[in-house]
Length: 598
Image 1 (tube, rainbow, N blue to C red):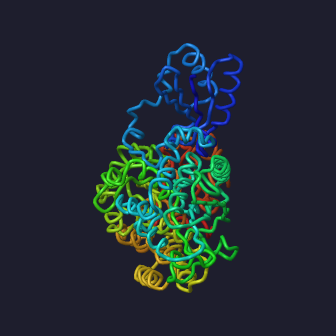
Image 2: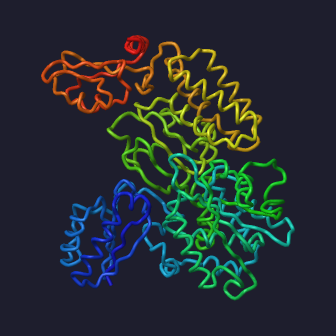
Image 3: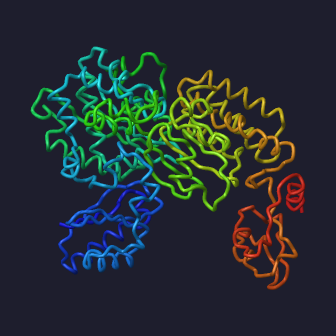
């Protein structure tokens, strides 16, 4: 039977995929077509949503993108009824965004129905778990994961096999296996997409890990802001229990493993493993001193192993393909693939999975299609609030743990925010400090107060009131915070500031000495002015101005009242005649100050 899959991940739903599904459902029923309609997760090309894939009975796959109900009606008429694909709506198989990827973790995302265990089983699902518990000892499983070279994908890059062996070596009548799905980095959505698109892969990885370390109970700590991921996890857990793939005496053997879902309230600090465990226990999510490490004394005092979603998504593929085949992908010290969320000023945003060792240039230009509006690439933020900004001069750096760390950034969980020439790097640092400062649990003095002092300095600089001595003070505070914070979140909080100071110090100097924002972004350092000789009096600026700062008679030169202007930029965007300029620097600031005084 011909099958049609509708992409109902969060990105597809946001783009209107539910209406696409309902339109297809109605048309197929009205025409009584022998077509199976199903759902799937995101295939990764979020920029081409909504999407459907047609899989004819006779074979082949046809992926359609950027759809609406009218286009769906044409696809039904010409393709499903007439047998002729609608070429102008197709995403071709050689589409660089998809063709340049290598999918191991995301192999099933956008391909199978995430709410159907039958679809997962048909894709060799739970075969690795069957092999592990019936043919391999726990020690052999751990040796296989060690041989693969898999390192934790949550940010630290700690060897997964070694982590499992430490948990197994610690004696205890009770042990726990935890999946960290508390994805909190701005611009990151890797874990959400995997949980929405292939939840059974994570459950299978958890069960194999539990068997390896000797755990019989596990938790998936997932933030409550992911309702669709939670729904599909609940469905997957219920299905796996019905098939005796979770629960008591799995596959008829001695191994038992039960999984619970714990919804997090969205605290960024709960991504840190000791804070996460405290939250599961019903306590306030705050980090604790290590040692002891979770492998020694973790959840409720029992030996505990914690892996993030992507790490667990690698486990079953490693056992299926073999450690050697997996280790052949990537670099000498960074094996396998890495999933990234491409966001920001990139033409083709979405989810990608690429081999370790690929360069940033390949990711941004060959896969991501380059910068929106063909502007100049300026920097990419890797690792979220704990990471750093990598400049254009390092576009050819390899994406692996050691190479990225050498730049001053970190791989992190996989958020990749692309920035162009319109991005102010001082403001980027201010934004990330604002995030980490507000998310600090407050336990450490240097993290609680030090990030606040850093944020105040950055706000002063972006407001045109900075001093050159501020730069030395920023670096001094950064050093103290890194040295004195209890957990990794506090220790890495200064990274965005340090990397922007390292690679974009001239922008800081411009803000301080000339009260100028080179990117023309910082509101207190810019002024919108009408170029009299270019103004035609079209009135568009006056129509869009929310504070009536822009005004003038039709066909007469307009003006902008600086006392009323809130620097929103709507007039600049609306003007069709390039008659509004953005002035920046001391003169612009004086003009703005004069207007405000008036």
